[in-house]
Amino acid sequence: MNRAAAAIFLVVLCSACPKRIEFGPEGQLTDADVVYQHVRRNQDNVVTLEGDAKLRVESPQQSGTIGMFLAVTRPALLHLETFDFFNRPLASLVADGTRFGLYQTEGNTFYQGPASPQNVSRFLPVVLPGEELVAIMLGQVPLIPAERKTLELDTKEGVYVLTLYRGAATQVLRVHPKYLRVVKSEVRGVPGYDLGFDDFLERGGLIFPGKVELVAKQAATRLELRYQQIKLNGRPDLTLYELTPPEGAKVVEVDDVGRELPAAGHESPAPPVPGS
Image (tube, rainbow, N blue to C red; front, side, top):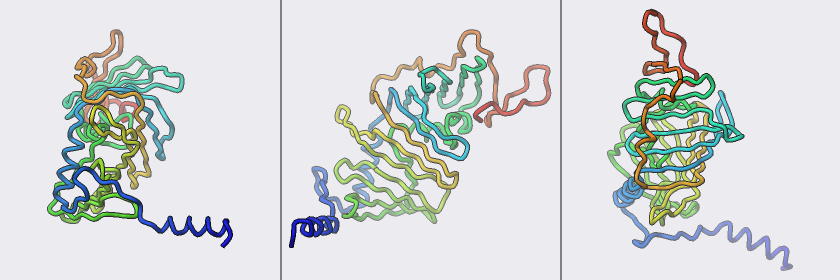
């Protein structure tokens, strides 16, 4: 056999071999409940995040990438600032679980109202409750309350496949065998979205995904959040979550779906606020 033929043979042979799997200190796990508890514990140990990121949006309504500064604290404290290509501020959004505020530099206007899913998701083409949005940004997967669980080892992909069942709904979790962190979540049987986590970083003993991806197939929407300089589990700066309009800004009250409420003396509501 000549060298070229031998090389091709080795490539074909190796491609058929299962991926070498590196397990954690407990070795290979075979109990679905044990893996589930590890997943819960490992993703719940991140409580706060502060730093810079890039957000990539692909949807029928808009596509592009923006820079962000963000600070999030469980369960529902949220502070987001967006910047254009030249790092000029575009807007900032703050929510404390009950109320939200949105300041738009264009127009010097501060919108405030209830922290409803429609209001806290204004930077996104998908609508998520505040607690769910904070959890995803912290690298966590919202888990369905399972009635039963199954576990398999996918030797080709080199991951555990943990499946949660509740009625007609299933959630398939692909779990890193060493870090015991979810790398992919797919929900079927009920309306939902898929999540992907990659580029895991180690920060002070914590394993955290440097990339978070959300795919809403029904809405033909994909979001990708790439973290840059971040700090985990630091003491939160609570001033970042204050709902105070900038001095001189026009203040507008909105309802839970983002519609501007009528000012005193007016009877009909104005159209929805931009981004609602």
